[in-house]
Image (cartoon, rainbow, N blue to C red):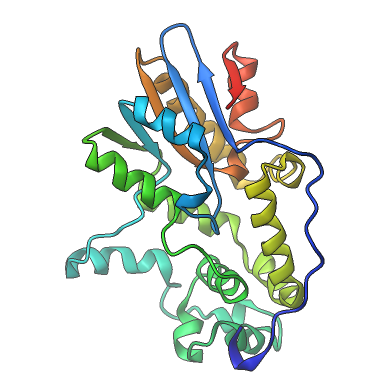
Length: 264
């Protein structure tokens, strides 16, 4: 946390049940799709041995969106608007009085730089100021290994799709709530990461709410994943836990369409 503030002492996390890792095999009449859940704070050590074994069977890797953007100047210019507000807009003006300065103290960047950022970017920076994330994400590790194995790689979203979703999902109002809640954020994020590592469904099953942008995203993803599950081979996908569980999640949709869904 910036400005010398200390993280609070958090109560111990206690899983609601003794669960298994967040890995599922979806089987259809012709092929199978193994899905490894991901979480923003988790890294390669959080991938279970069952998932790694399934990954070795796979002939296709499916990711959300490629994590690396090319460093060519022209490419950087094209992607910059995805992270910054339109000229003339200001994050300071989008937040209630005093919250911009609170946010700046947490994330530790200049007012000028912060004022240009879109709410979702500031939201991510706020989260990273409160908890230590893995240096290498599950997505990046699996994608790297898929390319080392020369697997075919499919992404469900383009970068533009991904940024448009984050734009819609993380509103100034949601950022404002997170800023006000920042003293508790370290404990909350830490508990969610512990819940992910414990495979505790109850911590994530209610993440999907009807009418939110994530529902349309799931519908778009599911249409492609259902086609992939029909390929006569084993495919492997790394997808955020928030898209998988609950009555609106991808796993429930597979089950409703008659696929066998097995937790590994």
